[in-house]
Image (cartoon, rainbow, N blue to C red; front, side, top):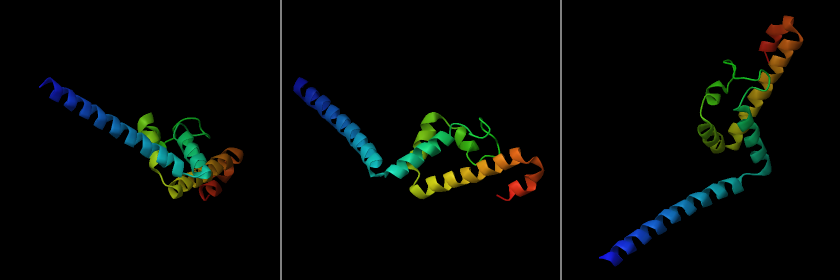
Length: 117
């Protein structure tokens, strides 16, 4: 009976470690399959989920406002699951928003022109 319990315990440990190593292997593969530009874009987007670089906070008019309110773990998971096209779309929206905010600061009377960007 004692040997059966030991065999069951060892089998459980082997399965647990196997699942853990499989998970780590999949994580490594996911990172490995991204190109250098995709990794750079992922890091940029993750940085944008921390705070707005223009207003240094979490403005309510930002397209990343809801994401910034998530936990660090949730944001990491979300950003790592984004495809290349989604990363580029977020970065493009950010560039347009940043240009609009800079234009509003530089020339306050041109606010209506800034809204068109």
